[in-house]
Image (cartoon, rainbow, N blue to C red; front, side, top):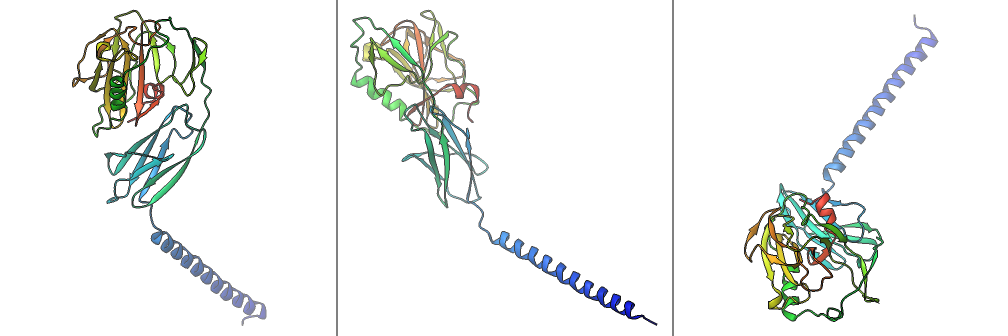
Length: 304
């Protein structure tokens, strides 16, 4: 015989079982609903990785894009400029966004567009650049460049070839001491140079000391004083590919000619004091998509 208490216990058990089954059904049904939502949610056509994540003025910003299979080649835009994206394998692309001392600090939007548009905000940190005072001899104070020199330099800066010649971190172009770093501002004979920043790194060494190619590339510029390179002096320009190029000025001699392919560490010339120079040194400038960037991150961190 079942007591009243037992009857109610049995009813409670049945009710509890029904409620448990209902809870399980609701939970299971909800999980199915979530799975359906996720399955129907559109995946990004482009997943974007930006480095360095906290850049400062003068840095090169690497934008690596993982594209979905079949997606079109993306376009990268920042601060009103469009930068080429090159395939690096496995549906991945890479573009470089250059900055300089005149890049406005604060938020910069990098836009990746193609099959979809993605806007990514990057904070550009302010960087304090030192000031240097240069005293020029009377005969050099008014030294000017020539149209031929400026045109050839513009061609080097604007060069964007599809091949990538460099690999890993770049090398030091000279064993000499660094006398001027990237980005410094200058007074020439006591007069401040407006809108000027030092577009490279200077290495001082005795005249004739070797200058090394920091990375592989093609020699695209050999500029001689007698041909009009009066400001930069004897000059060598190397195309490293994909919008990256180097320039070396004030040389005393050339060990390469235009069209030569060079490897990292190869001697390309000798240190000198030709052109607008105060003593024997080599100025190494690095251009990325037409902008003079700080070469130092390319030496220590490198970009693939």
